[in-house]
Amino acid sequence: MSEKEIMISCRGVSKVFYNFWGQARVKALDGLDFEIRQGTVTGLLGPNGAGKSTLIKILLGHLYPTSGDLRVLGESPRDVKAKERIGYLPERTSFYTNLTARETLIFFADLLGLERREAMTRISQLLKMVGLDNIGRRLVGEFSHGMRKRLGLAQALLNDPDLLLLDEPTAGMDPVGCREIKDLIVTLRERGKTIVLTTHLLADVQDVGDTIMILYGGHLHAAGKIEELLSRPEEITIRCPSVSEDKIERARKILIDGKDCPFEVTHPIRTLEDYFLSVVQEAGASNIEISGARRGEGVAQYLRNGLEEEKNN
Image (tube, rainbow, N blue to C red; front, top):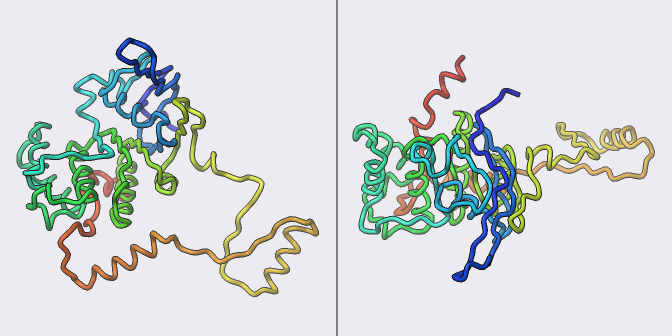
C-alpha cells in the first residue's frame, strides 16, 4: 500500500465542557487516537451524544480540545491556510432567506476570493449537479429542508476542497438526492479527495465508505476497514446463474459433506433504493414539470477534472 498524506492526525484528544463555576459538566471526547489518510472515505458513527458533532467542530477549529494534539492537513485546525482546503456541510444549513440560490453561491464565492468568471462557471455546474438550476432564482426562504441541504452541499464544494466534512449529508434528502450524494463521494475519492461523514444511515456508509470509526461515550470503540470489520470468515457466498433443484441438491451434498450445518439457496434481490430510482428515472423521462428540486445532471465538471485523463492512461 502506497503511503498517502495524513490528512487528520488525532493524538489523545479530549474535550470537557465546564459549567459557570469551572466544574466539569460533560466529557464529550476522551483520549481519541486515530489517523485519516488522503483519498479515503471515513464514516464517523455512534449514537446520539457519542461526540461526533463535537469532534467535527474541533476539526473545523470551532471548538478547542481540552487536551491532546490535533493536526488537520498538517496544521492546527485554526490555521487559515488549512481552512481554505476544507469544505463543510453542517447538519442544519443556514442561509440568508432574502437571497436566491444563485446569489447565495455568489456571496460565498466572493468570501472565498474566487475569480468571478471561474466562480460563475462553478456555480452553474453546481446548481445543475444538485438539481437546483431550474429554481436557482427562487428565494432560499421558499426552499424546503432538503432543497437547502442541496444548496449547502453546493456551497461546501465551491472551493474544490481537499478535505470534505459532511455532517448528516443525507438527512432530510429524498432517495434521489441520497444516491447523487453517494455518487459524488465516490467521484471525489477517485480524485484523491478525503471525506469524513457522520450519519445514522449505516447503509450509506457501507455503500461508499472505506473505513469507519465508532464512538460511544466519547471513546473510540472500533475503527478499521469496513470489509475487514464486517467480514464473516466462518461462512462463504457462492453466486451463479439459476440452476435446477436437482443440481442444487447435488451441490449441497458435496459442499456440506454429510455435516449438519445450514445451507441456504436464495435469489438475489435489488435494493429498494435501486428500484425507487428506476421508477423516478422513468417518470422523469416523461418531462413532467416540477416546481421543486429535480434529479441532478451528474457531478460538476470541475470536480471531475483529471479523472478522464487517468482512466485513459
